[in-house]
Amino acid sequence: MSTVASKRCNDAWIWTWRRELRGGHEQQQLTDLFSIVNGYSFGSDMDKWMWVGPSSNFTVSHARSIIDSYELGNFVRPIDWCNLVHIKVHIFNWRLHLNRLPAKSNLPDRHIDVGNSSCGLCNTLEETADHLFAKCSITSLIWARIQLWIDLTIPAWNSVDDIWA
Ligand SMILES: [Zn+2]
Image (tube, rainbow, N blue to C red; front, top):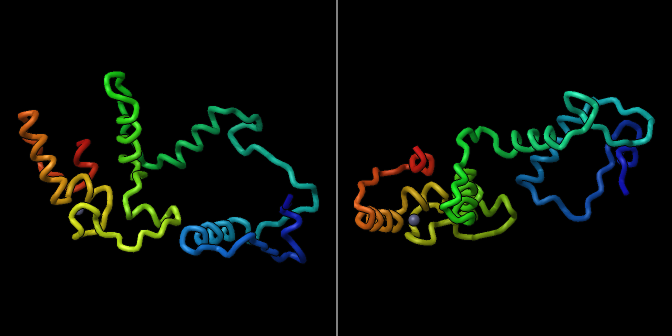
C-alpha cells in the first residue's frame, strides 16, 4: 500500500504508475493534484484518514451533499420521479440532462476511441446529446411524427435544455 510519505523524498514527489498516463483528463487531474499539494508542508506523522467537514464527525448526509454538489454542479432542475413513468425512462432522462449518455462526444472522456465522431444517424455533424435530441435531421423527422401522433405542436429545439424549458 502506498502512503503519502512513500511518495515524498527530500521534499520532491516520487511518482510511480502502473501504466503510462493517458493524457487528457488524467493529465488534467494530475495537474490539479499538483496545484493542491505543491507548497504544502507535510509532517513526519503517519498518514491517517481525516474527515474535513463542518464538524469533525463524519455523516453520510454531509458526504452525500458534497458528492451531489460535485457531481450535479449547476444542475438546478430536479427530476420529477413520477411513478407513472418507468424507472428506465427516468434514469435515461436524468443521464441526458447531465450529459452522461454515451453520445460519441462523451466517449473519449471514458477513454473509448470512437474514431469518427459524426452523428450515427445523419453523419453530418458531431454526435452530441444536443445534436441527437434537438438538431439532427433524422431526429427532427421522428419529432414531427410524434407531433402528428399526439396532435400537438412541438417548438423547434436547439439544445436538450430547450426540451425541458
Ligand atoms: Zn445527426
